Image (tube, rainbow, N blue to C red):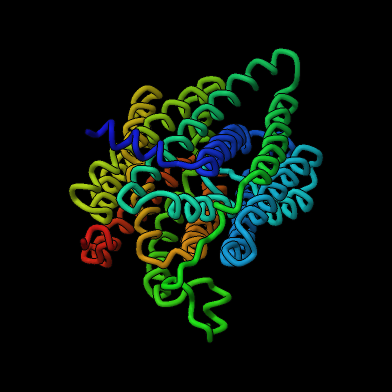
Length: 422
């Protein structure tokens, strides 16, 4: 029965749904490959660890502003056009990062463009794709489809991490480390252009469909038009605040800094780092599939909290391990349950708002997550600049994320989505 349900969930996707799964894979492959080498590349350009932390913070803050502007208006301006614009910003940022070492130019490109230092989603893509997918599948299958969508991204991130590690290691036999890492940055830009081409071929079915019952009031207040949401605003803002706290904690250990920590602590080479994060992201993706089955039994909110808590305890334990093997084991164990809250969180957000508010709701909560994640690397960079403090980011991240879990359960344990109420 479980297989049949998953099979039905995937077969329910129309052509545009399959295209969105493809763009998810390409984008996360690019993000995963860049995240493994980004800190090495920037330090190789001559930037200090503190400058790298500041640049990553500015990059994520810029992604926040771009995402907020695009996602809150995507349902009005057109989802296809908005996704194409995001892809071009991604390609442009990659080209600038590959062609200059000037800190000011890198900062401008990072702020305006789309760069992912963590290997996870940034920019307007995820929010708009979630909204489109929510309209083409039944509500009962939404979490399942999002689980497969999450798995697709996790496998892509893992493949990108492995590819970047192996490719840079191989190229270093013929080129400098900086030159081999620049190849990955150029690849990132080219994949951005490929995304723009695929988004161009999306049909009108990917756009918002408004039924008479879903139409917004004629005299819509200006704040509703600007934010893209109406009656659910209070709940979306509360979720956004909690998601920001979670991402702020996670921002201390984004994949770029986690890879750098393994290098500083255990002198791990790029190929080994690629293998470690390949395994970590595959485990994370598989855990997302288990989340949908668990959510069908205990509910979306409980699944989010009860799987996220132990993963954050494991995150806390990573820097306490005495050798590479145990640290890697703790990291892999953490990733094996770390993504179970992702499809459930996304599905829950889509369920509590109207169809024509989904892009905006996903965008606002996504921007909150990006904002939280954007601030933390500035402090993480300062900590990594001091050898005695390189373990502290993991401890801070674990503590903050556990606090998020407890607050989320307290605020939303009794707020069920419509399909669970029925």
